[in-house]
Image 1 (cartoon, helix red, strand yellow):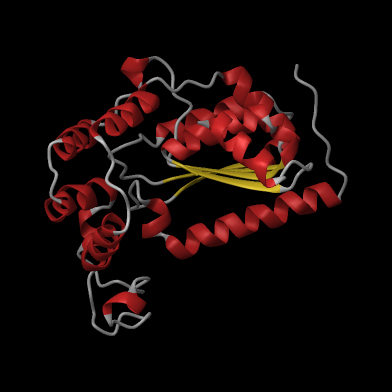
Image 2 (cartoon, one colour):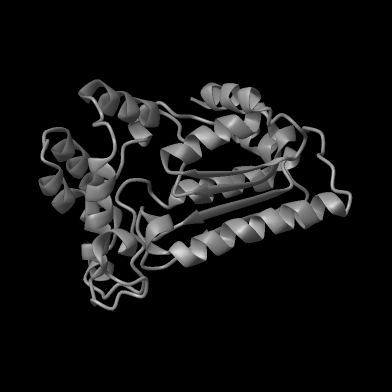
Length: 251
């Protein structure tokens, strides 16, 4: 899939040095690692969220709650019934029960952006999920299985992660603490491997953030904070380049 991204970038003409900010979430973070290893010279900043470096298949299975939810979803064709499984899989139950601060789907459902109707996060996320399902071609069974197989077989070595750290100006790793699909330790493993390839005073370019009471759907649950993180990484990556930062050689 990383090769597919490179083909698309080439087609679009996005081939210059340090033109890209890559944001990879979950399986997208796994793909982003492969992409960053292949074309580091094109990337200015990299955000890897709720993801893992992978490894042996037996270590790549999600926690039991996530595994049971994914299995149930394979055999649940009704989108409305899927909601009952998807949302608790992605978000903490306590957060789902809270009043939503904003409603990003307000233009479609008659609410207001600041949620004057006092919908819960569950209400807002359920509406968003069902709307996406309504306008998206359903995933085939083979596609579902192939996606899980890709996640289970993902593996990026410590040496390759160290290479990524040495060749990309700014990297942020962000995870929650209540993730049913990818264990937070995955982000910690990436940080350790990347730090191993850098001098001590250079390790601040790779930062690890762990947000409390946050689930796998981190970009939706912490929408404002996540957007601010991406924008900050873009600025810091560009600032490093403007200050003369250059990649270091592999050890």
